[in-house]
Length: 86
Image (cartoon, rainbow, N blue to C red; front, side, top):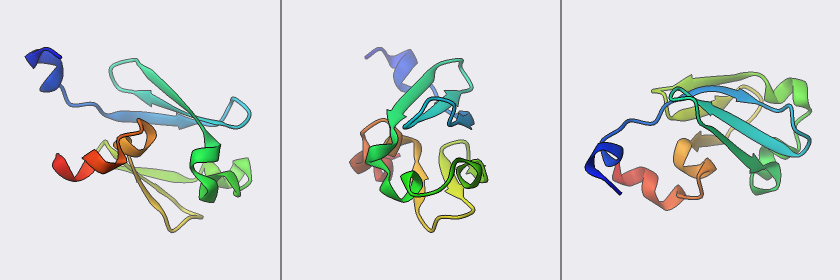
């Protein structure tokens, strides 16, 4: 990984649930991360309309109004053990 990429801050812009069984995170740099909801059972249990009630905090953390879980960008990238390192 180059130094330029390593020092780039990755920020969540918006979240979508328009693909059945998936969560899509649109990043501010234009990239999209699509992850199966099966990895987030608490979100998977919620109806789509309740999933759409969320808040993005500090560009990298997502709080859902109808869930007690706190999700970090790294969780969606499969790097959940890394979020404490930032």
